[in-house]
Amino acid sequence: MATTSATPQRTVLTETSFWKRAAVRRNLSAYAFILPFMALFIIFNIGPFFWALWLSLLRGDLVDQVKPFVGLQNYLSLTTDDITLKVFLNSLQYTVSVVPIAVITALALAFLIGNKLVRFKDFYRAVVFFPLLASAAATAQIWSYILAPRYGVLTYLTGLLGIPEIYWLSDPDWALYGILLIEWWRGIGFHIILFLAAMLGVPEELHEAARIDGANAWQVATRVTIPLMRPVILFSVVMGTIWAFQLFDTVFVLTNGGPVHATATMVWYIYNHAFRYGQVGMAAAMGVVLLLIIMPISYVQMRVLGER
Amino acid sequence: MTQFDFSGNWRKAIRLLPQAVVVYVLLAALVIVMLGPYLYIFSSSFKETYTLISIPPQLIPEQFVWDNYIYILNELPFSLWFFNTILVALLVTVGTVLIDALAAYAFAKKQFWGRDFLFGLMLATIMIPGALLLIPAFLITNWLGLLNSYGGLIIPALANVLGVFLLRQFMQTIPEELEHAARIDGCSDFGVFWRIILPLSAPALATLSIVVFTSQWNNLVWPLVVLNDKDLYTLPLGLALLRSEFQVNYGITSASAFLSVVPLLIVFLFLQRYFLEGLTVGAVKG
Image (cartoon, rainbow over all chains, first blue to last red; front, side, top):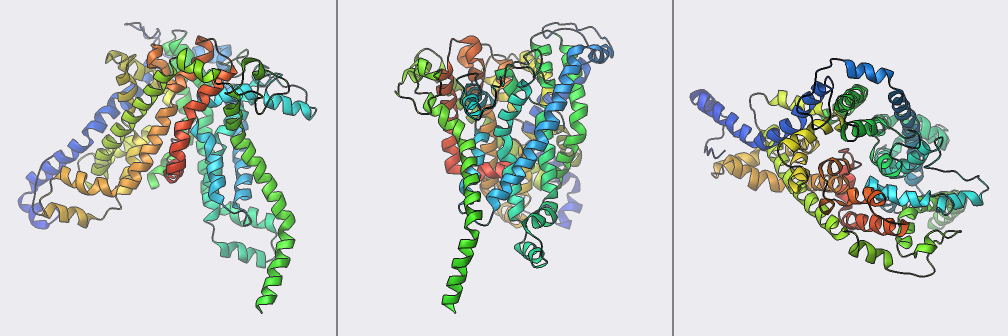
């Protein structure tokens, strides 16, 4: 690490006459820099990844020293288990609901804040960021009071509008949407802020040109602004989908998967089978299925990050 | 001419008035929806037990009492949770930034054998869902004897792939000439990193610090699997298990939830820019 070389290492002279020494030194120095990161990365990322694949072929609980090899039995069990199907459907239903709702409302709200009449845009940006600051656990506690039956504020307000009382978190037909409402509140700022940045980046001349050609506000938005925001909208959808499939914290705190598995998600299944029911193999198999779902979606995320 | 312009603007203002009214009414609604829940639990944290369940709900309690705060500070290990959270979040932040910066420097500025392969490997791990790694990471932490300890919370969190990307991208923009000049002045490799690269990367280091600190402050799953001892709990874990392990009501959950958010709210007000920048790193919402 402490190689002191007075000559800049790039010159041809050093490259040829001290080729071996310079190259070896340069390599060793670079490895010293990445060593702490790589050691932790291999122990806590790469290692666990392959271990998880292996675990999905075994049967046993966390503390078992010897876990018998059962081949693809865990994956077969997943296909015959009633709860598995419920968990898949819940995660799917939740994702295909929350992502379009969040993206479309965020787009509308970004247009609202981006409106030329609005002063102090930074203030509104901060306001929509606020919910992103709280932990899922704190947010869950906040909303469990707001959504409480009878004396919850939202329940009371909807009652004033003549809407029959909804048991947001205890009615099996509604619980997933109660969770969705909370997660919408928690995550919407992310999408709004991304959209706002993209929207304000669209050159004003393009809007002007469209208006001169006789386009109204709606046409300018749908034909000029939104098409130009497409990459950001795609990124937003990708991130929203990745998070939606990994929903856990809010469910864990508020409903623990209930009532009658109405809010049981894939990660909830993984957590419970590994750490509660002593079925590590089943949990790992579910994890691999989650990986297969997430991978093609986050491939897009990886490309975006790789390009930058 | 000026007069004409003035009246023109005036007419324009009248024409835009209805639109402005609609826009600001909608914005007001947005502010209420986004901030309302915070304000409501803040006010509820001063409610007495029976006013918590009054119908209609009281937006502002008739009587302010400190009972809930007294309870969480005296009867719950809340101040310990608070301390644990600060300690763990700070140590993870400092450790991650240092370890990531070292690696990012090598990836940004050095040629070495296997560099592109390792970088591709890191990029690929972004696609792995955290839940899949949870079980083996737990087993490894157990094997290292770190369960139920600060070390078990901190060490597995230190290698942050997204952080290396963020810092590498920034460090690539630092001109080579600065490094060469430092080397001619007799700086070692580490000297160049410590005296030139690190100070110049300050904005990116700040963004990463904010991202890591926030996600650690709010992390629930890892403390949940690693910790047993209630005195080691962090705030999210304490909050999550409040109602299953302690006899509490909404006044107590409101007070605890509010107190757990306040530090980040304060940091946010001062360092907003870095929070907004960190957003695109995709790690703020845990």
